[in-house]
Amino acid sequence: MGYIPAELHVTEAFQVPKTAGVQFHDVFGLWIGGSGGLDSIINGTGGPATDTTDANNAPVDVVGCP
Image (cartoon, rainbow, N blue to C red; front, side, top):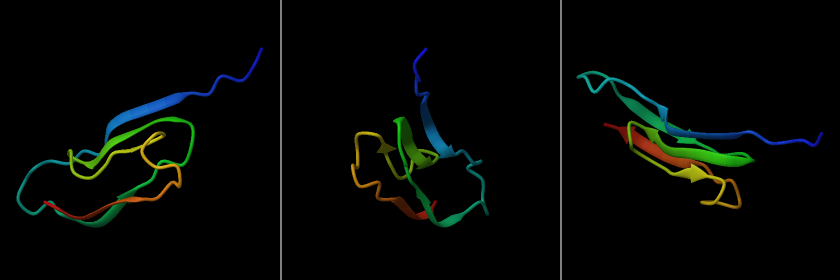
């Protein structure tokens, strides 16, 4: 039996409440291999980072959210 790689595909790397005081600074996502990816980094902000968006595996930065 041959090796069958798993595919991981997620909508958001981080899902956080949209509430006063919840903030993120200098966050990044990186897809390192295989198929699949991230549609966004935080609550729809930043991204995508997938197997087809960047052949060099560069990080997708989110400077601040919200």
